[in-house]
Image (cartoon, rainbow, N blue to C red; front, side, top):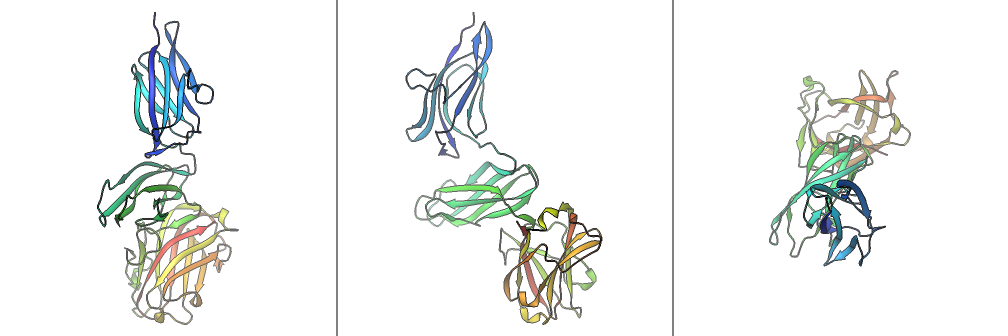
Length: 358
């Protein structure tokens, strides 16, 4: 006759090396023995925690760690699953001996969130040595911009590149580099990494140049290029070289899969940063235009000369405050952007963080 195999569970349950809130419910699912056959059984820290009688003897802080202790009887060779509320299950297969050790849990992601899958941090360094921080993130639920940031717990100040925001498709997994050369302080460096969805609708963060090109090669201003010289967000901006050759305009364009902007018209704000290296090359009536295109139709936003100055300009316009629109334009299915400026001499521009603020 089969009898249950006694199993002691003595595990530290952590998240990224930090303690888990021991007020959270923990459930242990396993197979007991009933009539010589495995029979599913479930116990938890709400109904079955008794420090004297068990079966769960402890769920709390012990020796500085969030620690779980229990004694159960299992059908040898079956699985034991430990689940902390809000975290992915911890599965032990073919169990026939005690379960011990330290385990780092991963939070259960929900739609509209970002989940840390793993991270890499320089393990040790002397004062002044560079600290590298990378984090591998999955975007959960829907296409969205997601952010990641590494923060010094002692000062509450971001390190490295600060908050990085990049657009990612639903369930896409990618590495974010948060720091490469942040100097090690003269003390222990305690970091936390925060990730999540960005509420704004990102049109382009210019961390790569997908499909961007000069709209009319005959103008010969040169193609847009990534730049690390003038940056407002992330690692790069997009440099737009204006080379005056007798023509008083320059245009750059890109195309992408159709997006629906119809829900952003009433409350959205078109927002971006534009750097102008020499405003003296602008006409008195110069302007910067942004076109949102759909096929051969468009809606156009105008930023006047009075809004353009040397250096960085934060340019914003209500989505409903457009200058003009093609009669057949539809907000459902926008598939491109065109940038346009007129000037009387050569200079450089940089654009960054093009988005719709909700």
